[in-house]
Image (cartoon, rainbow, N blue to C red):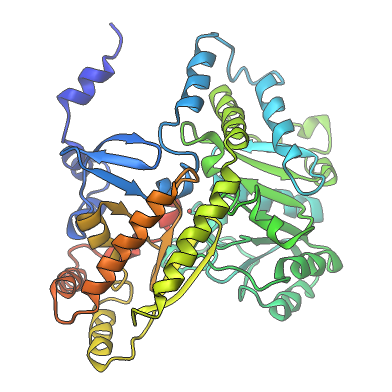
Length: 477
């Protein structure tokens, strides 16, 4: 008898938090309950989720950027179903799989320059680990540079390139010869490059943590500096790629940057199957896989899985056919410009920045003495607390799922599916306005929620509830 999935789900409906409390991550369960995110979702379609009460939620988080093309995308699902009916061989290992060759060809066509070889992974952090190994082997140098506030994953090597000490703390010693430079600072970058022992500079063209956009010309100049000093320029497009910024790669907004490696993942398979890819120059490949004896010197058991490859092909076809990149540009501008028009009405709103559908709302110290006192109180309780005063009512009162952008930064991050509509954008903006109106009344219910969560954090009840932020990227990233 085969597993009756429908019965399994029905018999265990509502047991989500009970099972996670007992078997998976009890501390995270406590965090979700403390901040009121303990919803049980039972259905998902496109940019929407539904809970056990049938309430619909607008998903402005997209599984940390996994669902660029919507949840349970029917076209991608149909391609997977059609493929499974073929009884096609998978993971033979001692073969050259057809499907990975086809997906590699499609990915290469979308690059802004000539990247010759595609290595497939299961995730973004695996892609970063691959880039570190390839860069060191190809250049015979140990050093890797990353930017402040960077997020490249949480495995040991990629964690060594993480700009947030909250994620690094307790896991050292990490990979040696890793150097952090301020994001956007060319002088600091060249100072480290000039040491002569740097293999690569790994950079997010738009930083997922906080949606930090580089100064104009920075990426182009950084690439030139890498070339000058014999280092590789590696673009981590795990979150910013696959059309999210309105172009296939966020790197393309600066023109002909000419990366040596590009890392993709997250939405590559439409959210159905873990998948990732590292595109690289042939000379780099030739130095890593330098002989027949070394033809599998770096490999991954599931990296070229047939389901992942089919999902990737179907995802690219869907993205092109539905002009999702153009929609990301239009809807990103609708949200960004809509928020800019109301920014000056609300003292807590410091900045709005966006590139396509990577949007940041940053908060800052207000002018009013009363509101400034409220701001100070929240930050004394916990430096990451204030944005929860926005994300919680957005979810509870308006059915909008959003994300705190990281530890100790007052930023809310929006990375919704690229298929959202103008109606969705307007709904979010109107909900945000209502939340802002209440937050600018102190004392008031919004501040009571902030105070309650802050007291819980101080007592150790939920640890740092606001800190879900960026693994928020690859608890998340």
